[in-house]
Length: 159
Image (cartoon, rainbow, N blue to C red):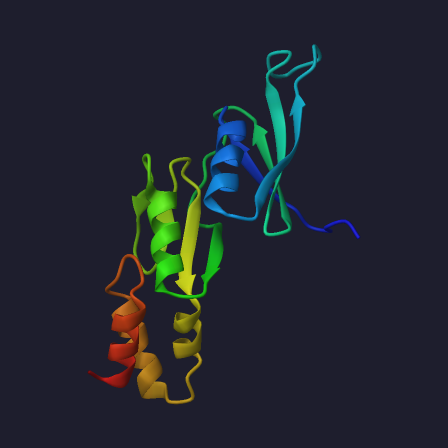
């Protein structure tokens, strides 16, 4: 069955470069199709119009639509990370080459797209049955850029 809802990303003129970047950051990524503008436009004939790519089985479309729209934090992509090593890896790769770290596990990549790099442990701590552990873990998270699993655990434990 085809994917019913697809994330559509608007770029100025970097759709192909962004798709290539994302498919190298995520080990289960691949570009599936590149469509080019025809003589009908509105882009230059032969230039890249739309790039279809896949990350972990989820389809994305990247459009070279011109400088009309920019990404902002109202929409972000969350990456579920198994452990600190995965958090560190994605954080380093996605902020490289002009990306920027943000608060509470958020960052912007070199294209301005917002990402949340979240260790699974953070989700577990936020759903802990002890409200004091949740409060302490949340307070610690609010002081962090990249999330630190050991520091989150220590905060939840009150140490």
